[in-house]
Length: 276
Image (cartoon, rainbow, N blue to C red; front, side, top):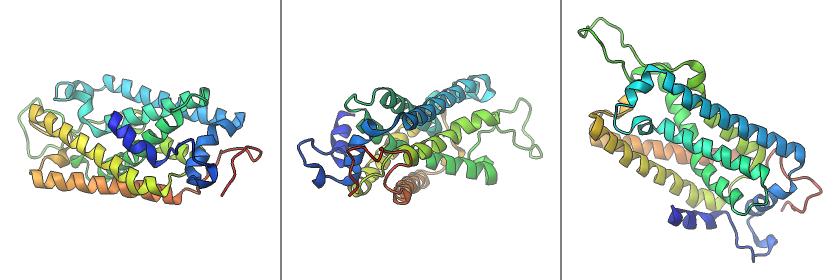
């Protein structure tokens, strides 16, 4: 973790000895944003972070009331075998860091930590939402696990999938992407070109390797994969991991390219940030 921090940090956090005019304008603006955000904008930022983190936590705890949760706890890795839960945890952490930065804007390191977390979490949340809702609508058998049947199997019986309550489903598979998208465009500056060229691919590939190794280990314990679309030969799974990683990188590039550069709720006009 420390080595990753040291590798990613230079991508957007310039040395303090560098003159502001020579810095990447997005990095310089990010460095000064917290000190120049007016109270009303800071309140809106805090409200978003607190509400999003609370709803994500509620969705996670409400899983314990479902039959699906009782079933997955018996499998290898439990809840954490699902990319959704890992993405939810990262999104929740980003919102909590954002809240801490709103309340204590002058604590050093919080802004850089939130930028790092956002770089990993934002494209991951979009990837999870896209895959989940697309498959739920068009091919639920590829994303939803089937409940064990108590009686003898029948070829005429319709699959009985585990289903989450809609509110819980949205909190787990929709809210992280929505909250991170809103936070990025309303309260964050765009990432620099250097970060997009190096940091975004590095973050996506690192997350992909971590999850691929973890889910393969969990599958050895359970005897099957948490997502039915992964129940294929190794070559197919590697292709799926590679395609998802490429999609995640593409999402981050597109989101950053569509960002106007400055946040909608940004620094005040009388602040000491100079647009270059």
